[in-house]
Length: 483
Image 1 (cartoon, rainbow, N blue to C red):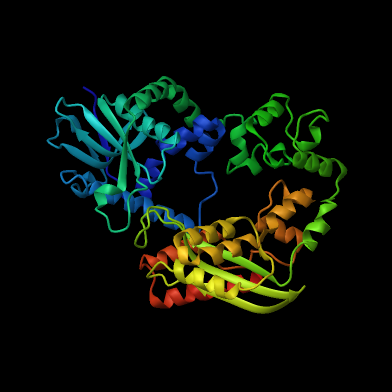
Image 2: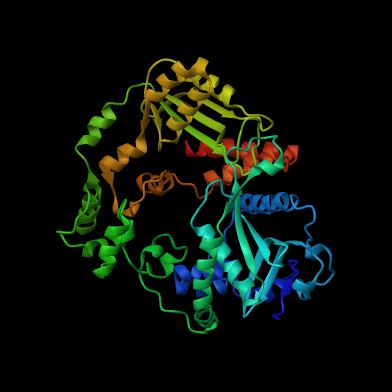
């Protein structure tokens, strides 16, 4: 009979250090993507995730698990029934039908099972909770790791369910309707067996004092340590090519090509990629002949419009579902001649209610008449069209406003390129390059995700009245400094 170990965790320094001895799901999956990344993850060498958006993510993850656990009235949270930080026992012989949030170790691996429910044949039903609103392939990998560790302990899992958020759930509904259940037993069992087959090698590589030698591959593109790993001292990496397809990327990697200047003349590239390659080879800035024409097509007065929004795991307002995008703020400047702002409008939503109707009416009021409405990216147009769909009586006026929107990012993408862009066109990337004295570095809230998280905390009632006013002032100061 295998011995089963349940780890009862608190977050004291000693327990955290104890946990770091083991290979958890994050480390294991990171290894599958890149052995070097897994090795570094185990040693806590990755950049720390910081900011309000990361705090909100952790808070919502914890909240969704607690909600789900409450659906199992007989579930036992071992952490709350023992005083010890670490308890060892054979759960197969315990008179407990359902465990929630229990962690297990075996052969150097540590896994947490969200819900384990004993069935009549003494096998177990594993429930894995996901905070997404759509099924993702990575969920199979994640839960397969848990099943692998349980299999090492001789715990027989006969049914596996992934629970994710239902788009049919609305604010105020019974909490049992929040989740959709997907039976993924067969897929997970196959993947878990694959993991078992390689687990010894993975463990050996991860505990080795020698870091696995990295090599360039497609997963490097979005790696958090790319700049200090395979991208170190590499100027104009092929990952800087805009919209580089995976097949093209794999062809270049197979040819041993890692920088844009090495790409052969006869390699198939789209028009934008050819422009980028030429800028790299000639060390010049690309300015299209059409840029002047597109700018001259803009019609005075100009309106510079920017929205902020929030999308929370749990709906904030009536008639909203998980991750509904709620508009929370906009700023608008009216310009009658270049460099001269004649009017400035600003709006922050009331956190206690959905202010979409009020926002729509304000936009109609402020944007009355003619003139180009300049945005950066297409979010504002999409948001206004959603407002038009929500309020039929305002639909005609809002649709007319959407037709006046000019996406300045699209103009830049088509007509201007500087190698310092490194294939990216976000406002945060290009603004300091085009206008060095303008940047986001000294702003207290310098990230759109953090601004959204700040509003979410306010709407959830987690901030005092004083802090609410302070955060709103910071938001306005942020807008004014950028503008």
